[in-house]
Length: 127
Picture 1 (cartoon, rainbow, N blue to C red):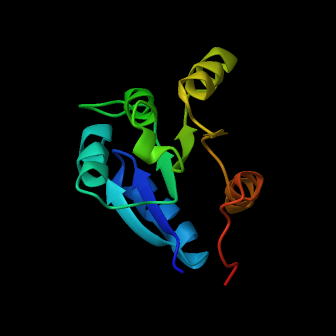
Picture 2: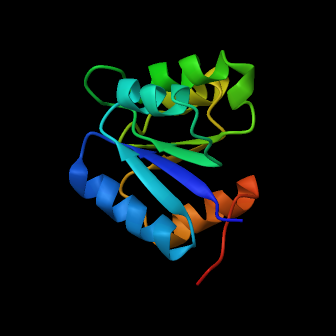
């Protein structure tokens, strides 16, 4: 069964990079430019295994997105990874307390992302 990932970042370049990495792992990837759009996608009924979420975005931040998703029991199995330039430990704690499963600081590389996915048990094929 194909795993599905949602990449949420206001940077088209970052969405492209993350989508490329996940696509290479066998994920079917959909992108969203902010948390609000991502919530619309989830609320439309599409199910995802994983969401990579930027913190700083217009309309709805990644932090607010994580808070909203974790209010909904139907999204309990969705693994949320913050991928952000926010490097303060307090920010990491906030994200994890809000319900993020992992936290990756930009800049990162493919190996760092793979390591986090393995920790979460959502790594797909290494293709």
